[in-house]
Each structure stands twice: as C-alpha cells, then as structure tokens.
Length: 274
Image 1 (cartoon, rainbow, N blue to C red):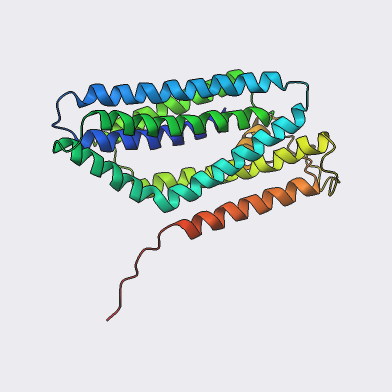
Image 2 (image 1 turned 45 degrees about the vertical axis):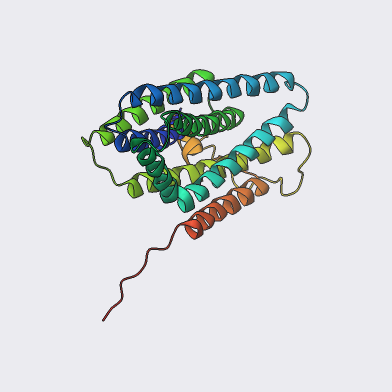
C-alpha cells in the first residue's frame, strides 16, 4: 500500500504542477479550463489503455516463464524509477520554463488553445504511464495485494490532487525542492528494493546461481511478512533472509541512483567572496 501511495502521490504532484503552471499562465484566457480538462481526460484514458495491454500481456505469460517476466518487470520499473529521478533532477526547471512559454504564447494569441490540451495530455499520459509500470513492479514484488495497491493508489491520488490544488491556490506553500527531495529519496529506495527483488525471481527461474547463499537471517527478530517488516520492505527493500546477490544488487542500485541523481542536478552558483 505504501509503495503504491508514494509512487502515485509523486506522479500526481508532478502532473498537478504542470497543470497548475498552465492554468496560472493562462488565467485570463476564456474557456482554457475546458481544454485543460480535456487534456487531462485524454492523458488518463491513454494510461488506462496502457494498463489494459500490460495486464493482457501478463495474463498471456502466466505460467510460462512467469518468474522471468516478473523479474523483467521489476528491472524495467527500477530502471524507469532511476531514470525518472535523474531526468527530473536535470530537466525539471527547463520543463517548467517551457510550459510557461507555451502558456504565454496561448495567452498572447500566438498559439491556439488546442496547444494547451496537447501539452497537458502528453504530461498526464507520461506520468500515468509511469504509474502503470511502477505499480506493475510493486505487484511483481509479491508483497502487495491488489486491494492494498488500489487503496494506496487511491490514497496517493487523493493526497496528490489535494496538495496540488492547495498549492495552486496559495493555501499551502511547500518548497518544490523540499517536496521533490523527500519523494526522490523514497523512490530511490523503492527502485533499489525492486532491483534486489528481481534477483529472487531470477534465482527461482535458475537464471542466476551465483552468491545465492543467505547473508543473514533476521526472521526471528523482524520477519519481512510482519506489519513493520512489510513497511520496511516497501520503503527500503528490507528482506529478512537476503542472498549475497540480492544485497549486492541493492547496494549497487542504491548508490548508483543516488550518485547519478546528484550528478545530474544543476549546480547552484556559489557567491563570490570579496
């Protein structure tokens, strides 16, 4: 539930900021709300279609290389989460600037209102597609039921939409750097946990056999199927009996994503001392 909530919350916040920028810049443009709403609806519809096709693919492969398929989903989801952090760190400001530019052109009459709908639809479709892939990764990890994922996704959607609305109307002021810094850290741990979980499926399929010995056993202290163990598993990838390969993949993924995200972030100019 927590994994789904964090992922959906982050993506809704990003989509909400995009919609907020467009609405703010085109505040005085008549009927701009209809076009923005249409763009949101088109993006959501596209993400839903992607979810249907992904579900059909999963059902078609059920029982035939299911472990390999689950591992592939987890690996792709972990890579996408990592790339998402890195891309947002390096392109977040430029994207916001581009969106403001499109909004100003529409407000000045240089572009048709259809441009707003297209920009919003593409943004929502991108975020929605990432949600679909990431939730399939959470499902493939085997620690979340469908009900808990739906509850977490609904909670993330509600919280993200509410916070986006409050921030747009100026009722709540949270620095974007702080908000995305916290969620970026959580997503980094989620991605590392997914990468490590993919090793379990590859070992079950007999595709990975090196470093298969259990490194430690803390099931007596904190089993990963307990309530607190599940929370730690979702948030930080905790496993009570990890293999050597699981631990190695987790540490490499965690450090690699952290360093790459930090390197991609634009450097703030230092003030000169006279």
